Amino acid sequence: MMVQAEPLGGADIERFAEVLKALASPARLRIVNILAGGERTVTELCEQSGLKQSLVSQQLKILRLNHIVSSRKEVPHTYYSLKERNVIRMLNCLSRCEGMDSVPDRNNAKEA
Image 1 (tube, rainbow, N blue to C red):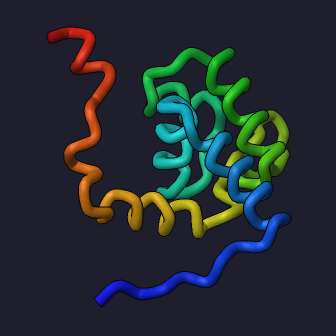
Image 2 (cartoon, rainbow, N blue to C red; image 1 turned 60 degrees about the vertical axis):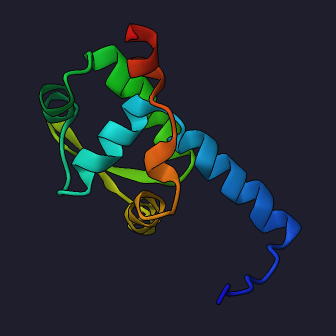
């Protein structure tokens, strides 16, 4: 039996589209995934993600502007954490969607 969903309001659609755009990057998803385990510094995010510092900083800015990540300063470091914990729930839900296992992996498709 299919469950009917309530239609989203216009403002919600715009906001959700912005959040989805902010998450539509493998680098940002890596960062979000790491931050699901707790707050980290840029250095820790670089070490754990394998991404360069400039790229991590750039991606954190996008995530902060979209209210997905927050930061706190504790001299000499800035610590980043997930502001919106429901993002992890949303990604977990996406991983359980039917048909997601058949979505082509563009990186592997290039190697074939």
